[in-house]
Length: 404
Ligand code: NAD
Ligand code: USQ
Image 1 (cartoon, helix red, strand yellow):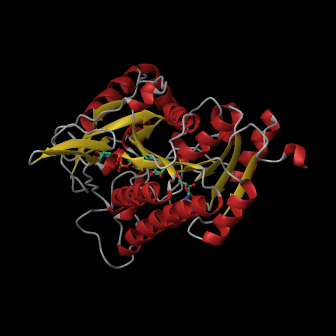
Image 2: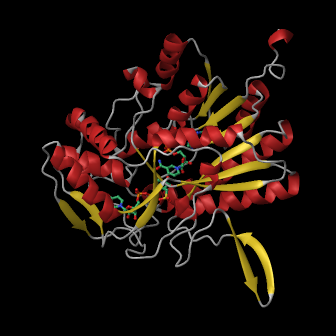
Image 3: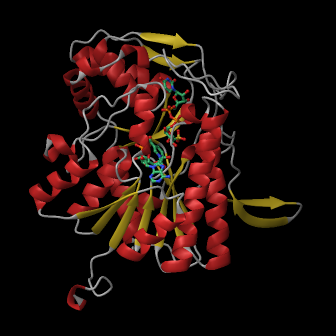
């Protein structure tokens, strides 16, 4: 009825694209808990990749329908669900007209660098899915919801590993006596990371041309699995990827330690990246939503809390594993990627802290709990999925099956 009409309700309406995934599911529950009106948009393609590649999350994950029903029964809160592909503009139009979002949080992309380097068709899929999906979101905002704030998940990997400090989005350069503040140079090192660079360019342009308000969250590597909301019930449990295609560094090392597999350090192990706890992912996204960008503003935040090299992580997991009685060894794996293995790295990350982020820094207790979590599910681990099988140099034009 008009009494509960969407625009008159004071609760902010947040559409979470990719809300069935690792970051998106945790964020959807957190925002629902914080009394935002939440809708999930997802085409479940991530679950299909698992089937196609023969992979599975360490944790058993319930269907999105069961997840949402369970949340409703525990909290009384509704999460709306729209199943479909954002590359289909008619579908996206319907979701916008029906839900009328004040904020769109866009997690809905193919996010694995190795997946994008399997073969030509996966490289093309990744860039099409990510770039066209984001373009459609920009057009939907322009056409149907021009005041809607776009919170877009980018990646620290857009910057690469330059031999100077990494700023948050922009750098002021003086050249031949003139100065300007320009987009920070981008050097993605996979077709996936480059898809995010292309997205950033499209978003920046539409902020200028159409007055879109957008926040690009250049997130580092996420670790952990539990958040306050997902641990309320086993049906709400989040996914935890440990395989060589979708698993990320620290999560993989904890699962490897739990099953007695040597830690897979690629190359020299000096690769340094920004990392953050998934509990901080949900906090950062909430801060960005609560403090929106201005119309026409293209705001960039570097979303991570600490820097580690791969060797640092291996040492931390080795020490934490020993404490709970695991015998952890490390294996130097020939690097399947093309990347710097020893390099300077110093990236700014102050803007989210200025908005109030209280970081969960990587502690002994978190490592201990993540390791124990992995031990609890260790019978589900398929050891054949641990060693990398996708090579940046051997990427082929022909469709490849990735089997160990
Ligand atoms: P994920 O694969 O677990 O989740 C992505 C979700 O998006 C999936 O549920 C998938 O089905 C959905 N999706 C993909 N394409 C879609 C489309 N065309 N239409 C509708 N839904 C679609 O990934 P994640 O780890 O949760 O990452 C979420 C976002 O955060 C990604 O954009 C990723 O690049 C970014 N990010 C992730 C990490 C990390 O460490 N996991 C780090 C930095 C940035
Ligand atoms: N690495 C190892 N051993 C492993 C796995 C990874 O040495 O077993 C190394 C990689 O070579 C790389 C680094 O660890 O140098 C990080 O690799 P990763 O797989 O953890 O992360 P990455 O491929 O960069 O991608 C992940 C997410 C992606 C997100 C990105 C943030 O999958 O969606 O964008 O982290 S960032 O790294 O800041 O670009």
